[in-house]
Length: 255
Image (cartoon, rainbow, N blue to C red; front, top):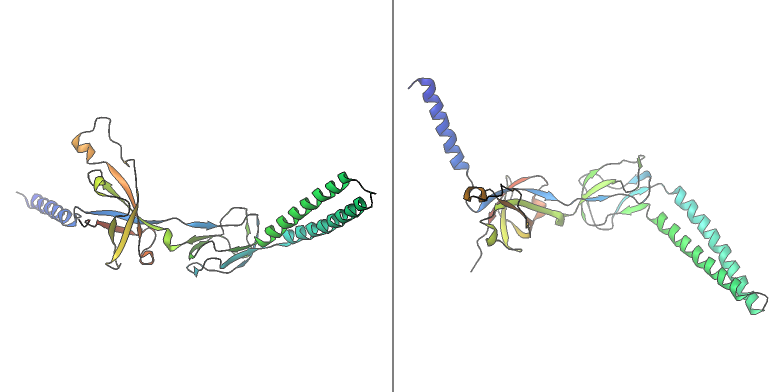
């Protein structure tokens, strides 16, 4: 055997040995960390006037995040307030006229309807003005900021992304042979580089459809390729990061 061929054989054997050593245990599966991000944006377009947070900040629920310029909303509120004052005076005059039989019931009803409409417009204007100040919908960490002070943002476009710790989840796949052994609420253990050893998670989702569909005729070999998505909620989300690769070990159930 030539030296070159002997070298190739040794390299191949070493590669197989390394692959065997790196093989995961039967109850351990590869996965990753994902999250349901909250994208916070305004109801109406406007220019960002103040930004109260930075990327990486931890915020409490209802904490101020940002404000938009409110000149138009303030003008609308002033107009609605003036209209409300006028219609209220008109309604009071209509009441007095009915009492003195100088007015009609129809005129009073019309004045009352106009007053209700003016009150609704005033309340709407107040709400629009108040919503120019946007607060955090939940406690979490500011993951990313898309618009800075002075920039124009369109309606429903997110100004920032917020990650509540409870929205972090572990995703991994198991073969169909393992699926009957799993149930919602089962405990799994999460492992990752540099993470604590005691990160537990609870299964909260088991897919009902496969992620890989083989040909119509299912041989024994093809059935081994069927995998199902599992999602688990970690008990210590602060120890994990979005996009982080992890290994998930199934915890044997106590009988």
